[in-house]
Image 1 (cartoon, one colour):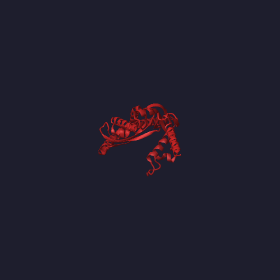
Image 2: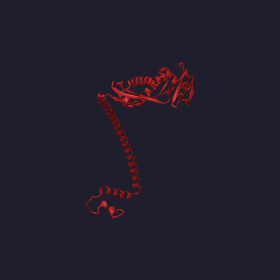
Image 3: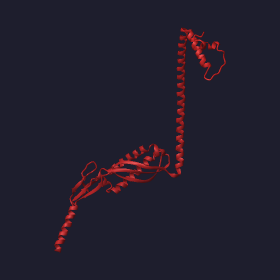
Image 4: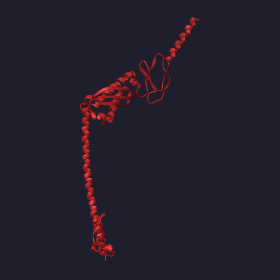
Length: 281
């Protein structure tokens, strides 16, 4: 009985080994390479296709190697970068990538951890090369987005040799070394003040020009209006001399007697003749 139990247990163990070395599961987030004596036989569920599920391989002859199918990422430790203006910056960045050719990735680095180490080296090199050719102010603010795109393109070109696609690279921080921060910020403030003064001076010149042009047009228009007014009055005066005399008297009253004016004058004088009679008699 004991011998029979041992035989059954041995058979069950052998069956378990056979099954476990024959069947394997590829998850939704995985891609797999089936190898036979180190040579690729097939790739399952690679990026761009959807083939998760239960698969079979030749037991003890073939093996399955799994890699992540999802977007992966890592953060690069702080790096000391010297810009083109010889100012020192402390920069750290992160990258997002995915394995698009699992066979090439396996042939080049074998393991995901080793692949990430290679990618960190590539990113560090791209950072130093790209940022080393830029000025400090460009890295900190004015060209930061453009520089990140350049780094991502350069890193992606090198990472393709590993079977990896670089999705994005971001500079998380780019700070001046403490001892030079105040000096560089003062230089940046001085430059901004110079630009502001130049813009303000240009604005003042434009303002003077606009006002002068407007004044010229205003005077020209007023002169034309006055001439037309004089022409109309002259024409009207010639047609009705009595009306002309009345109108001049009304103008004289308005100009000579503004609001609040007190005058002592005899009402019989010539100045008030239209006050005594509408016909000025």
